[in-house]
Image (cartoon, rainbow, N blue to C red):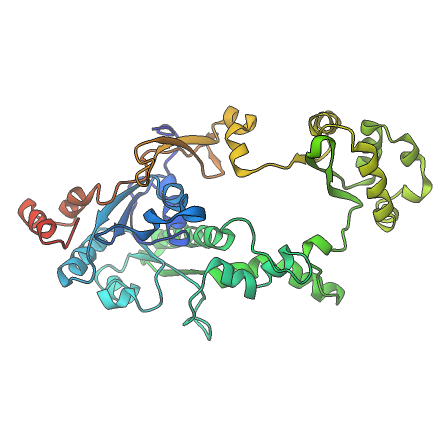
Amino acid sequence: MTGTTAPQPLAGLRVVEFTHMVMGPTCGMVLADMGAEVIKVEPIDGDRTRRLLGAGSGFFPMFNRNKKSIGIDLHDPRGAEAARKLCATADVVAENFKPDTMAKYGLDYASLSKANPRIIYASHKGFLPGPYDHRTALDEVVQMMGGLAYMTGRPGDPLRAGTSVNDIMGGLFGAIGVLGALIQRGITGQGMEVQSALFENNVFLMGQHMLQFAMTGKHPAPMPARDNPWAVYDVFTVKDGEQIFLAAVSDAQWLTFCDALGFADLKAEPSLATNNLRVVERPRLLKAIAERIAHRSAAELASSMEKAGLPFAPIRKPEDLYDDEHLLATGGLADVTLPDGPKAGEKVKTTLFPITMAGQRLGVRMDPPRMGQHSRELLATAGFAASEIDELIAQGVAA
């Protein structure tokens, strides 16, 4: 595995997570990547996320690396007791089930903190406590009700963002809360409950547009129809139908843009001398630029923009990133072995947490676990004798 020499600031921290899908597992992945021992408690037949198809097929291997797996039947009182014993050994417990679910098994914060006042409990929900907290939330639900789909799509055509943005960020905010709670515990010796929620995450993302309305009194237009503050800031279709994003967001960049692409006449035009003047002329200007570069290749334009130090971007698909020279050169991708599905056992590349610590990326120490891969080891750490573990597994309480 890679990343074994990277800093592990959370080494020695034990996290028990009762999570599925994306939000909760993201929180655990962040803590695991930073060195924590993260234990994924799964149902006896495994986390259903393992069996998702289509757009969900990448969820489990993406968000469950560097974790251990134990299978426990929480519906069986003996299984719930085993889970509570495991939590008694933990510093952090994380979950992302419906409200009151964990309380049924004595695995809520109120129950666990009685036995262990130092426990930090990260709860990931659809909504923070309030009038909506009984609702079932999905990333798409909160994108629709929280303004993100409106801002992403064209007018009259709300469109969810092209990734699980609230689920992922909700997990990140949960992890941030855990880190803050750990610092506080180091001062006071007391744990606390931390909550993160999809809806509130989405509203936080909308804050800039809400403040735009508060400042201007104008309803923010969806991004495809927004009043663009920059004249040259768009996607252009060029030779062979390729597309490329080009931008010039200051007067200095405009002059450089014209020099780089050979637009001396546009550079000299008084009506285009400042950004605000160019914004007024934006429809005419974009049409002129599009016509002038239509015969050029995306690679040629990218080279000219890069040499000039101007912002640009090729339009890529997710699979194109596997060949990205920057990611390959900087170790931004790492090998994992798939635990499930038709390609189980095969090695593929995954993306790493997007930070460095002491100049190093936080790598993959352990592949995404097979279902119940660490059950015996973990039950032993919770105080079960070998014979008791054998009995729990034989009776289907653990797997």
